[in-house]
Image (tube, rainbow, N blue to C red; front, side):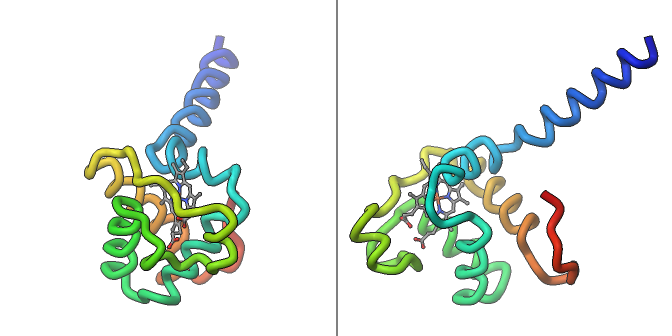
Length: 116
Ligand code: HEC
C-alpha cells in the first residue's frame, strides 16, 4: 500500500513538473527547432541585459514576430522564415516568459551546470 502511494506521488510529480505553460507551449515546439531555447535566451540576455528589457522584448517578439526585430541570423530566417505570432493569451504568454526567465537567468545562481 505504502509503495503504491509513493509510486502515485512520484508519477504525479513528474506529470506536473512537465505540464506548465512553458513546457507545453514553448518547449514542445522548440524541441523540433534547430536552435535551442537556451541559446536563444542567452542571445536575448546579451542584447537586452536587464530582466525587464529581456522580458519586454521577448513578449513583443512572440506577440508580433518580425524580420526587423529578430535576433536570428538572416541565413536562418531566409531558410526557415519568421515564426507565427503566439496563440497564447496575454497572461499565459507572460507566465511562460517568467518561467523561461527563471529557468535560464544567470544572476544569483552562478552554477555552471543546469539540472535537466
Ligand atoms: C509553433 C512553434 C513555436 C512555439 C509554440 C514557440 N516558438 Fe519560439 N520560435 C519558433 C521558431 C520557428 C523560431 C525561429 C524563427 C523566428 O525567430 O521568428 C522561434 C524563435 C524564438 C526566439 C528567437 C526570437 C527572435 O528574435 O527571432 C525565442 C526567444 C523564442 N522563440 C522563444 C519562445 C518562447 C519563450 C515560447 C513560448 C512562449 C515560444 N518561443 C513558442 C517556434 C515556436
